[in-house]
Length: 190
Ligand code: GAR
Image (cartoon, rainbow, N blue to C red; front, side, top):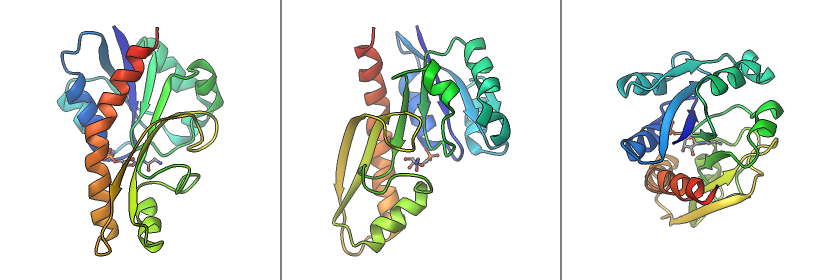
């Protein structure tokens, strides 16, 4: 069984879609939820699904040691970022080479980098009158949003689409594709 940990900073709707997808899966198990926000709704979702969870402060997260301890304790092999807003420390990128995946709510390399997350991304796409947006799933390295791209999908935008409408269109794509891409990627790894 390949054990995965999901890291999330907020609501965790992607985390929940991943949890639901892998329920009863023959070879992949969501074994831990990690959040850097004590009150993040994703921790409530973890409880609802009886999945162990841990809150790690931003300060502890930066050193990477405590989180690594927790990952080892739960035999985690892959880390799935789902709306996780901190930079992943080198301690983790080195211990988990090609084993950390992230989802980004735009078509990287556009609209990526530090400070480009969640609603900021959709507002920027809106401000630039983009005719399409989409989402990207990529491997994680020491830089924000720069790891190898594994999967992208586009969605058409209408001139009348507000940032909230753009966000909803992209989130729908994320829920549909992220669990499948995780499944395919993990299966492709020995
Ligand atoms: C998702 O849209 C995800 O792509 C984005 O945060 C949202 C989290 O939603 N991630 C980033 O912007 C990372 N740069 P959720 O908590 O409902 O899954």
